[in-house]
Length: 80
Image (cartoon, rainbow, N blue to C red; front, side, top):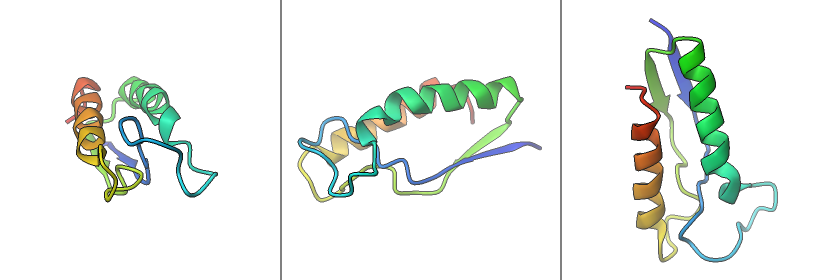
C-alpha cells in the first residue's frame, strides 16, 4: 500500500491578517495542496495521512471556517 503524508499545512483563508511567522504561506496552501494531491494521484497513493497543524491559528475567528474549507479540499482530492 502506498501512503501519502502531509503535515504543517497552516492553511489560512478565512482568518484575517497574515501569519505571525513570515515563512508560512498559509494563503497559498490551497493551490499548493491541489498540486500535491494531483501528484499523489499520479503515483497511485492509496491512503492520505494528514499529521496536523492543519490551520494557521486555531484561536482566531474564522479558524473553523478554514478547517471546513481545508476538509472540503482534501475530500475533493479523491484520496481516502
